[in-house]
Amino acid sequence: MAKQEELVAAGEETELKKELERIVKMILEEDDYGIETTIEAIRILSCLANLKMKKPVGLGIDDKVLSDKFKCPLSGEIMGDPVVLGSGQTYDRPHIQKWLNDGNLTCPLSKQVLTHSILTPNCLVRELISRWCKDCGIALPKSYQDSDGDVIAEVDRIYLNSLLEKLSSSLSDQKEAAKELRRLTKTTPSYRAVFCEFNDAISRLLSPLSQREVESDPGLQEDLITTVLNLSIHGSNKKVLAENAVVIPLLSESMKFGTIETRRNAAAALFSLSALDSNKIIIGNSGALVPLLELLQEGHPLAMKDAASAIFNLCIPPVNKAKFTEIGAVDIILQKIKDGILVDELLGILALLSTHHSAVDELGDPDTLQCLLKIIRDSDSERTKENCVAILYDMCIKNLALLMVIKTEEIRKHTLAELAETGTPRARRKAGGILAKIFKAFPSTHSA
Image (cartoon, rainbow, N blue to C red; front, side, top):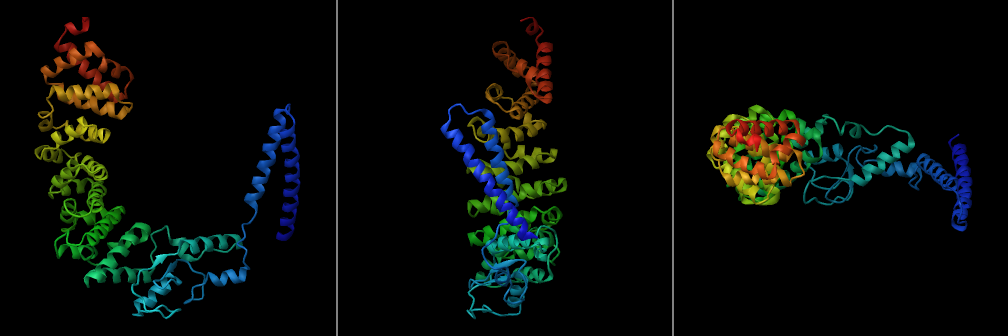
């Protein structure tokens, strides 16, 4: 039946190609061909495309030979999670992992002694198996079906535990295990989900950094801090990580020392953890605010962005706003804005800080006011304008001297009057509030 369908489709394709050839020839040779001719050519191309999509994509190899190539040498079954061993041979992960966990140090096929036990996903073979299963109408191996869920095989739990054990072994073992943990927690959600179920898993993960100077081995430090970032993505890990006694201090230290990748990933981990309100307070009380601000001040573009994201989240609780103000956040952020650096992101932080009385006292500067008004006039971002006018509102609502400066500017340029007409609802409300305050404080302004 399938063969007959293929013959019918092949005949239909041939006829369509002949018709298309005739139409195209007409278009090329005749100057006065009509629009109907063009539409007909498009219709034929569409039909050909539909046929092509329905046509099975063969791999050019006999199914029996192909299925044998997709079988794991150890289990004799189609591989669900093909991985490459250090010898270059491909096996199904659960079976080769069990081989390694049993203490074998050689490749089962080649008998080659292994220099490491890292297993690398064979994405090409995985894709070929997926296509082959689809073409043959058979179910994908179980590992494929579970790969996007929270299911993790017992043999993988054994593997994960073995990696954690390696972190208390020699430096070379620690480096190997750290790289593999970084990879697994990045690529496989199930490893992130199950990680904290292991006894003292977090402390074991970070033990190499806790036992020596955090920056003594930059590569190891980067892999372990990045693993913390990967783990923090999983919702159920956020509280456990933040409440662990070593995590936040090590993230804080890692923002000061290590590769730029380590430093920005440490900041990104704090941003991820700060999604929980309870964690915002823990981080605020931990001493992490100063290194975050220093990382922002330092000026590396990528690191600044991660630091700014974390600072924004952490500025939501009033207690943290006060702490950031005490350590000089307002001056640092203002200078970055005036220098044209991360303007949109930093205005969002400043808008949060300006709602705290201690920050408002540092914002009473006519130069700052002029800078914010200029940004409103020049920016195309509605959110940026909204944050600027919110900061202005907090700055001058009780400051007659600044209101007078705005009054003078408003007579000349009508910046707030225009925003009160065209801005976001919040921007219109804030701009209108400032203008109302000006009219009340200086009645002559209305008639002017």
